[in-house]
Image 1 (cartoon, rainbow, N blue to C red):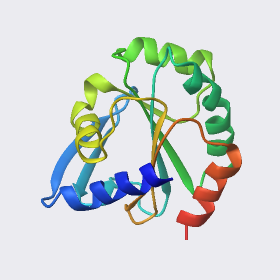
Image 2: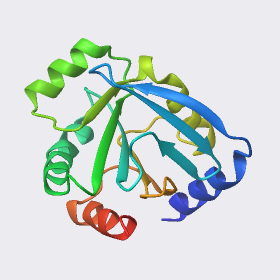
Image 3: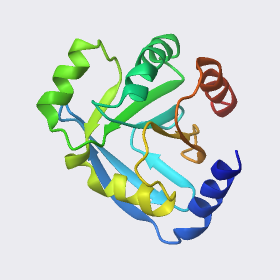
Length: 165
């Protein structure tokens, strides 16, 4: 918990100037991203809690978390948007094949197509590359949680309820 708070404080204090980025998902849809301080606003996500999940195709813990994320995306379609960034340097085709094979129902990205977002998190949240890594963004675009490792379904549901108000 202490690391989460420290990381969040760093994220809140380091970035003083707004940055604009763009994220293109593995289906070719683009999202504009505006970041400044603890704000991480993704175009079209206002009013939803966003789980920005950093994962890898070869990551056992990431694979363990996927069924929970799939279940939560189904359960909370009006409150939650999961956006998962593959950070083990896989291109679009392997990610989409994996997504189809595992019935992933949330948005996926290749690190190749959104490197600036990954670099921003690495620089401003002191994320060193450990996965799974989760950034929880509330309905107003404010980063509320930064967490490395697995989270229980209950913990993730608590985030959805708490930050969707």
